[in-house]
Length: 206
Length: 71
Image (cartoon, rainbow over all chains, first blue to last red; front, side, top):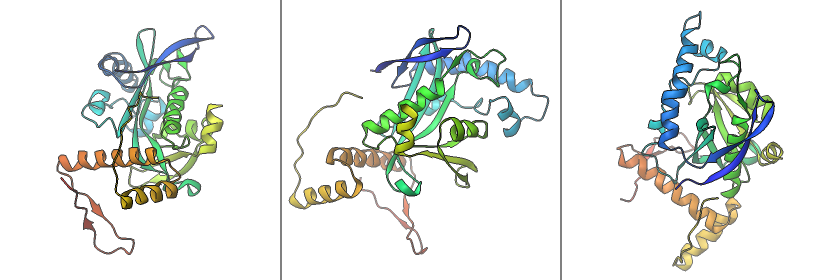
């Protein structure tokens, strides 16, 4: 059974913080929301591109994840190795995240120590400033990363997290989240790897 | 945090010593280490069950060796 925490998102339309629900597992309704509520506007945004569709073009509208299949990614995975999270607000899925528990840190000061690896993380398209002219909720990504850090702390990994970033999100992880940036990883589609040390994680959640 | 259950574990002296040593080396409690070991076992089992093979690459760059996993 999913556990629920109350979290706060910032509603850009009202200018106020609103209550949302953070669940510690992605359920069928979340996968369904991705297919039926997220994908159509993402595909529509991609179709409006006036340049060849590809990584950089889709990055410009923050839609590089338009092809992800969350339902498939969650199904059949060992719950010991994989954890998933969903944020819901106003009855709709606002954010999704999948993490893996068996990765080791790369940063010199914590090399070889266990980290929570963020495999997938995404906010609903109506929340993304580059995808829509009137984005709704802010802080979705921040709340999800905080959940990953909290899991890391619970598992005695001192808050350490790591991830490979789509190019559309590199500045956010580097600048807004304060993560340590690594070179593009040739073993992972040349995506840049980012890692949060215990100290960086503490600063992020404070 | 997820709800947990408690169990009693019987280990030999050598196994206990290994557990103590590994936990100290990794800076983990014995419980955290055992939970990580369980995750690693689940991860390996998941791959082996779908037909993947696991190899170990020696640090001297010599030929990889297949990791035998107990069924």
